[in-house]
Image 1: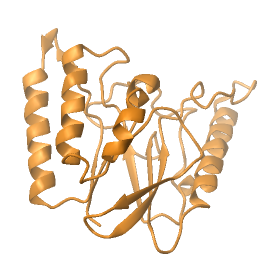
Image 2 (image 1 turned 60 degrees about the vertical axis):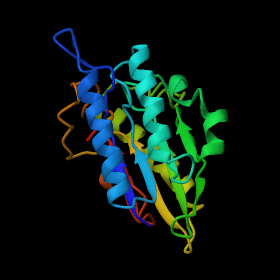
Image 3 (image 1 turned 30 degrees about the vertical axis):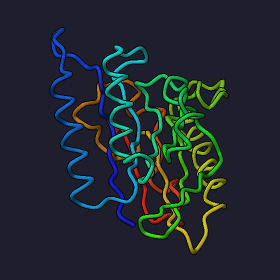
Length: 221
């Protein structure tokens, strides 16, 4: 199974007030070309599709056009999770329509694994798609104790538990993949990332990632 892992497109981002749509369109063209040339079986997009929770219409159009092209009319599975710049409901809004075309959208954190059959290689992927797990998106308070160490430990414990719950569905005969958008302790953020919720309390230890996975696809880093 040949997987292309991408993240942090930040569609709709501007440079000093000037549109970068032409550059973003060129990037999508290049990505589609790579996917075809390398005969990619599955595309994983690990968050930050957009640069803001309310992207311009042109950026949304480019996103949906990219999904259509990357999926090759449903012949190639594409999975997308939301990042810290995305509105989770905006990412998942089209899920009922696109799931019939092998396009899988995940806006909010969940504990369920998604099975993706990949016809081009005759294999199946068990994907653990943990969309950006902010405190609010996890729908729980980490702690009433505001000490950073206590917050970090509780956050890391919660993420570890979610990964463990999902990894329980992994099987020996499937390709088992974890995808998330988070900050792993000791990592470095991508050049496109602005310094919001980087490090500090909301970090995850590398040891908290499930050991039973063949590949971990992260965004934000």
